[in-house]
Length: 379
Image (cartoon, rainbow, N blue to C red; front, side, top):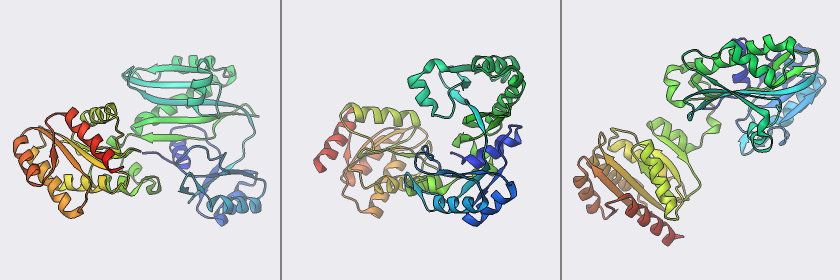
């Protein structure tokens, strides 16, 4: 789950990270009032959960409250990469002397969080990694000890922070790590961390990506979810308790278990197909949940075939089969279905599916090949 810039910076501020003065506005009149209260030039920033806002015209400078109202009205009428702009952040304009990148991500290979800093701030860190990787400095954070002061200082010196500002940088880095831990984030990022003309450090932009699996511990953060970011199918999947990600292919996948789902998509691609989604119904899924998953898959008009790959462990094969059959009764689709069920009550599950005239497969390879062939026959 992604947070907007204004939400992220508010959380940063609560952890001692300096941010610009400003507030969020939902209409042009509010933007004018905020600019008048600040009494200085402001920057009007669209609040949408996509990159490239500046290039799209979603960030503008305003010298006066009247100009702030005009700029906000223009931005609030925009759609950026398909998303409507419903709010703008009105921040004081900062005199920038230098831009730095500072962020923390989950490093699965190192089995810890990694803090990254770069002297090349203000641009996407992926672009820096591609063109000038030597400008990225990394610090591995031991989860038992957290970010240590000496690590933050070493990072500061490595990216060229002025000696007089190292203490401030260390405090910001520590606050960013506390934010990362306290919110159960998978990514926290300040880009840019600005060195102002007065030689002060301030977080001019902010980004937080939360771990969805930990949101039950943070109901106040769950309330910050932007429903515009989600497709209708993703909203329905969340309501049904399903792990679903829409992809660009034409073979729908329903699998119980994230690892099995990844393997299923890999095998589909191996045989020349393209998965239309990642969908994990989880362990212990009953017929109603399977039916909801099938309805979500078939709501995608690109789906030309559906492959079910079910391991009957906690989830019984016959329960999944009944969910598939019940779902088909409610949807009345002609999309070909291929099912591979093994494990607990698999034989009964295959019998139920056979009675519904569905294609079955003994192995994942066989199922993937049949799904790819079925999708191609419809194209």
